[in-house]
Image (tube, rainbow, N blue to C red; front, side):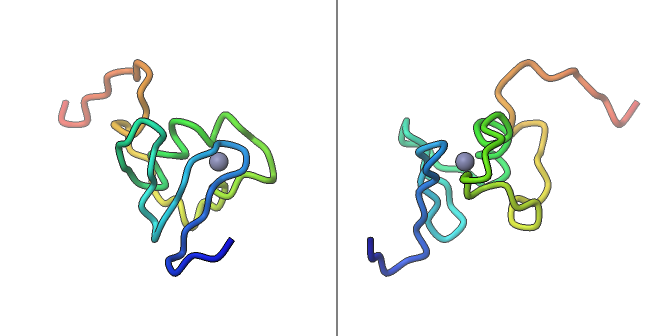
Length: 75
Ligand SMILES: [Zn+2]
């Protein structure tokens, strides 16, 4: 496949990453961190293109979709 941009599709997760912008199947976009939090961390396969912590960066709590424990840092 030849594309002009740095577009990659994760063979495991089926999600496309173009220039560090993740295109989710439902049409929304997000970061690699969000992709990791929602999909790739569960895949745990070496074929997954989004396992590089250096590229993923910091995964924010809001990147996950499941109920996260409410942490109040300002407490
Ligand atoms: Zn993946």
